[in-house]
Length: 200
Image (cartoon, rainbow, N blue to C red; front, side, top):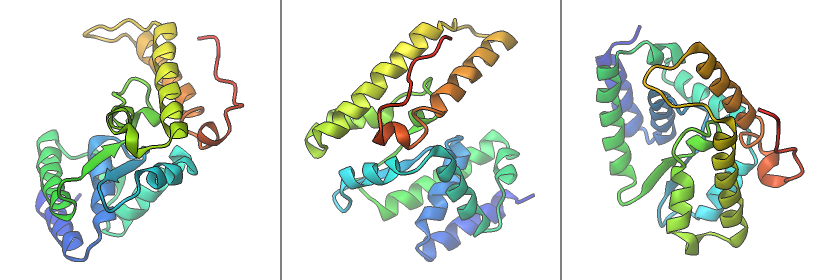
């Protein structure tokens, strides 16, 4: 098991060797977003191109890429999952400061809604706030996704409570799996002929 000190050393080494993608993958695992695409929006990157590239890949490929990046620094996903929350937060703060040094005045977003309709749609919020940077096709695609997300959660009607029952957790997981296999896949972003309604 890697200690906090060992992981911190690996972060420093990655920052010195310009291996920023490894730190972003580590950050994704710490946040539980390992199967989500991530984007850094700033002047040096074309936002339309970033989204178009992500559309070509399924959520499986994002997780494989993140796992592959962790292997480069001899870390396994289980090493991250077993860390206590306070250590995760310490590592996360360290990574965020390194990323901020590399990309000052940039916005980093994980598209969590691609694999979980119960998450906040940070990417769509960013697109709406910066509509002038994106084509009508991109804007309408993510608007449609947001509408379908809202409708799915409403139709599923899983009640919110402080303590969830096994039934509600199971139901929620089935909804997440359905969502992953529609909006998590590349086909939904390229070809809208996929059946997008089921009986919940």
